[in-house]
Image 1 (cartoon, each protein chain N blue to C red):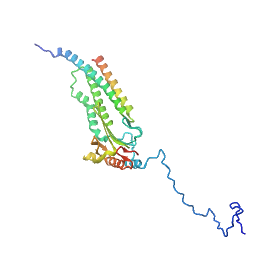
Image 2 (image 1 turned 45 degrees about the vertical axis):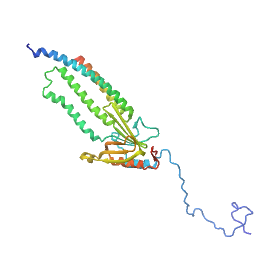
Image 3 (image 1 turned 120 degrees about the vertical axis):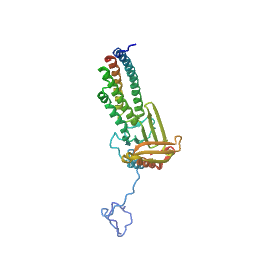
Image 4 (image 1 turned 90 degrees about the vertical axis):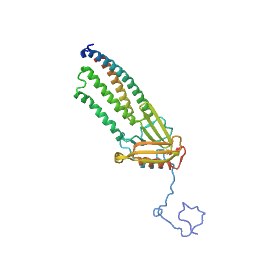
Length: 243
Length: 75
């Protein structure tokens, strides 16, 4: 009776098999290991979120009016677990008008001096008038800048937010959940708009505030695509996508 | 009645001084409002340059206070 040669693997009473094939495991082709679906890591961004960031691109400058995934940016009404995807201000080119006016205002005292308008007044009065004028010029530019800086349109994973401050006194806050957005359209007008790629994005909603307007925002087409992507997110409900 | 321009000048300057003082005081109050508003806005919307904006508003307030002081001292 034949016995197995490999006595370590077969018990003494086992029947002996004839012509057992011996194969070298190193010569065998490796079998495919079935993939295990690991749950995503905490730091890993969900696919939809990543897709939106791919559409929007990256912000190169902190002075940019188009802040994608801003790390420092925040607003009071932000809910827990709400992520700011995009914070947009009007395109910087809209500031050119007040910048030109400010530069002109800076030269007004020189023009007045050239015309000898204040010459009849004592030197002290002339000095105070100039000082007053420069302060007034500063506050004009500062207010215009603040007006631009604090008028922000925000796209989060749950809603669209429009924050405005009128004349530094009145605050306007409007929001619309992603789930109630019906139509999104954009318009780019004029030479400057076409050249610098900025325009207006109009968002129609089914909520009480039936429309939210993003005025003079850069890259309107990217904003529309990002909003559409958020709307199409699989878990986008009437309360917004929870990415 | 004979009106002499030279006699009217001191009166005009006094009126102008009172006008400047009133305007600068209003401006000082306004700059205080600006500080309050900038602080409030920066609380609502937080961004990188908020601290710089608050500093500017305070500098403006100081300049407005200096203006009131200068008007009282110089004029």
